[in-house]
Image (cartoon, rainbow, N blue to C red; front, top):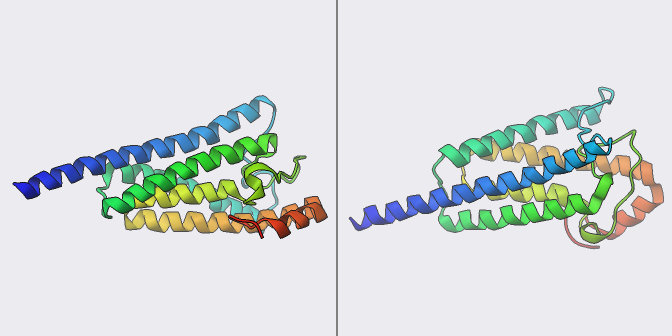
Amino acid sequence: MLRDCVDERGGRMGTYLNFIGLVILAAFYAVYIGKMILQKRKGIQTDQMAKGKQKTKVFYIELAMKIATYSVVAAEVVSLFLVSPHLPQTLAVIGVVLGVIGDILFAVSVATMKDSWRAGIAENDKTEIITGGIYSISRNPAFLAFDCVYVGLLLIAFNWALLALSSFAMTMLHLQILQEEKFLSKAFGEEYKAYKSKVRRYLGRK
């Protein structure tokens, strides 16, 4: 009977953590979609991933990243609804903390970028290089936020399929960062080179 009681409490806790995971996911993409809507009203196309580009390496990386990020969201939702947690609750709680950090970090990153924020490389848009605020300690805080949410949700509702998709998505995000660095070096020259020499790719100052 004691074991049944413990199992029941553990089941309720798992359900509760999964619900929090769904809230984390919803909040993250509410920021994403909300920003897109606000920019659309200003005539700005936020989503530049694999759009209006020649079939170059950048195009295929962005296309793969787009497929990966959409696929992992579907896997996260299914996992949070249907998959029972396999990891200790302590790790799931750490996942919640990471997810919340990711949400906050993403919201701050998008707000700080103002109308220079794009999803993908905006080859034909005139944007500014942002180096203040959160960007003074991370060159890619929005990508770091994605990673925090991916790892957080993985810890909350771990399964091997989600691990594979999350790993693939994080790899594609990293490859996208490398492509954006090349673009920014060409677009902003010495200004970006100086910024790059002071701030690390993911977190910290040099």
